[in-house]
Length: 65
Image 1: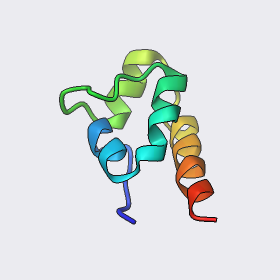
Image 2: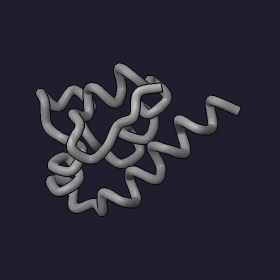
Image 3: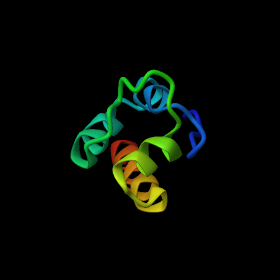
């Protein structure tokens, strides 16, 4: 599993962890963002990156059970 963080591109999150797609859709984050980092995408949507990160990690871990 590739570790991802707030400075990584949203598209990379989806490529490495397809289960995160539903989280991006839920939060209205464009996952074909043209290279925008998760932090920047969250800022554009007025979202706290820590909450989105938690949801992303939950989606990833939930598939590893």
